[in-house]
Amino acid sequence: MTFYEEAVKYASRQLELNGDAYSYVERGLSYLAGNHFEEALADFLKAAELEPDNVYALNGAGVTYYYTERYEEACRALTRAAEAMDGYESMLPWRNLGNTYARMGEYDRAIDCFRQNIRLFPKDKDNYLRIAMAYRQKGDMANAIENLKKACGNGSREFCQLAAHFYLEHGDLELASREVRALRSLGISDMRDVYARLQAWVFICKGRYMLAEMVLKKALRISSLTEEQRRQINMLMVFLYYQWGKKKKLIPYARAARDYIEKDSGNGIRTVREKLFRRGLLAAYLGEAEKARMYADEMAEHHPCRGCQNRRCVKDLYLEAMLCELHGDRGGGCEILRGDHEAHRQRAPCQAAS
Image (cartoon, rainbow, N blue to C red):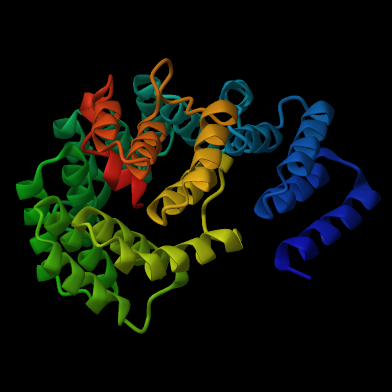
């Protein structure tokens, strides 16, 4: 029996004894921890029915809606939770509401929510990080970096790592290289895999494939790598060989990454859309056109990106471009990526190999 199953069993016993809103919330949280979203939502809604202003029930419902990509309902539940916070000291409703607006592409509203959380909890630096990420999504790098400094402290390892990511996604390779060098100069042993991935990204973007290969192969020999760290390096190896035109070399790394994703437990990939994207991407890298098409169609038709509003998401476009190339139409793939997503074109590969 897993930890979360034991938690559900214990919460169910408490529910039989008490039958109150608190017990429903506790069991809902246990279900949520095990990604049993329907059961979690039912318990949170029952708790909210018993106590309409229960912040934890409303917040739990909002988070469950978020993970099942029902963002409008998530906003409604989380707004009610934030409004009901009188007397509660919880930073979660405003933070989760901001996360939801950010996922929907409403970055200004997301920033307002995170700033409201700062007013309530001025010592919580995580809000500045979320503001920085929202500004990054808007393309406002000056405000993104300024808030990143407030979140992490200028020159810290967290700042160097995230700033390098920001600059890479923005296409500024020189500033990204600067932050990577700064990260390396800190000499922190448990950051070796992070440094390796960032350095490899810079080399790939500059077309220096042999150096990227050397850095990543060395990183895979780090004995302390977690499964998730190994997956990230494997995905980057796949992308490297794909860009390099050495498609036979990418096969073992793609299969290793896919095996990890298919385990589908405790790996942080919680939305259906993200799972479909990663599966479709790996199928395309492996030349499995039918599988890639199946995942791409299901993602676009049944799990559309809410953040891109009336535009097609860069991830959908990237998969379509890869499918064109699989069918020998590389020019068509490039045309798809240009489309109405010119501003995101540099970010597509970075998101794809994450």
